[in-house]
Length: 151
Image 1: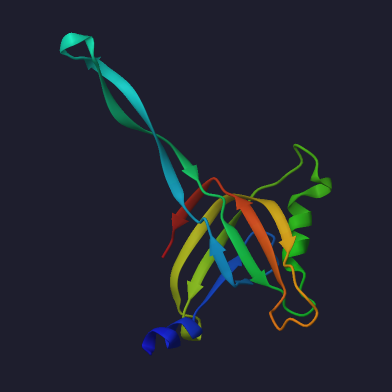
Image 2: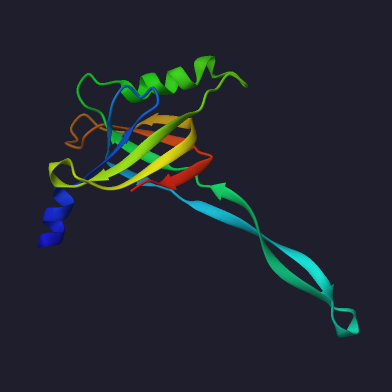
């Protein structure tokens, strides 16, 4: 019972950069950082066999996707997409840093991540039908260079 009360009173949001305020997040996926692993030869063993040892390589960020409900008359996410992708021409993009926040009841922040070097890669409006009671949503996929857990 307490788990469902906790979930109902909690929320996710994106803010920062030139977003123009806080944007509610309905769901998200792909918020991760991975390390590429390569094998390096560190010597030869008896019989001419090479000894390979895994070595950590560069960090590879995920490409997180955020689904955001569309409040009446609010077009912050669409405006942000256009601002960071002027004319959608190669070489004209800009990057920003955003904050992704998980807050509980009364706005108490439970966790917060700084998304660094953010660039929107894809913007999409949800599919829907006129007789459907589901909220319309915008989906945005981001390219990021680094994730830092702030709280």
